[in-house]
Length: 143
Image (cartoon, rainbow, N blue to C red; front, top):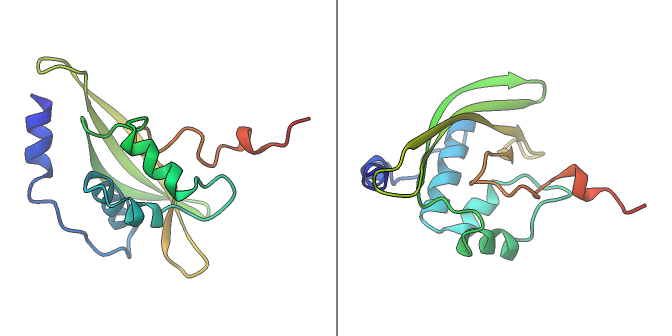
């Protein structure tokens, strides 16, 4: 049931929008992942320590370690948070079967401007983001 709903939810919203707003970047990132345009999606990630290599990023989605096939995102308002901007999100997930419950989780994406002034994603909720990407716990050198 949700799969049909997601199909119709995604129809009519297949065009990329301008990247000049945080909401536009989040929308384009999600749409690029849905279209399997991994190069474009990868370009929305911020540069820095912990950024996955492109092939790893791509494989996380292709191997379904990050499975967005039964999810949708509703993008909300932005809220400043220091140097960052929070974009309110509702991640909608299917429980697994045609009659399963639908789960809605309120979350947010964190974006900041890069050196060129473009919005880049610092973090997104699962399943649009790997738990180990940019994870400071994993970046610490071994004692």
